[in-house]
Length: 61
Image 1 (cartoon, helix red, strand yellow):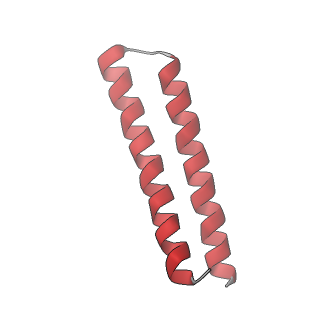
Image 2 (spheres, helix red, strand yellow):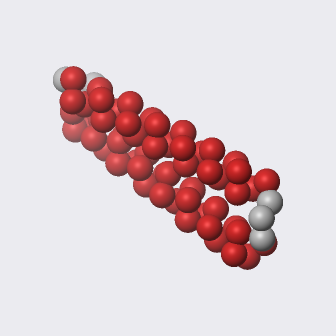
């Protein structure tokens, strides 16, 4: 995969992680603490992990 596509995928994963954090904060403010915040936090962590993996792949190629 070319470096350009790896960069695009990396940016998409970072944006996804940021949106999950924002949705989690909004959920806490609107509905209070619930299991939803744990799911969104887990999704954000996974998104940032995938972005980190793509970053490592891009640096190797």
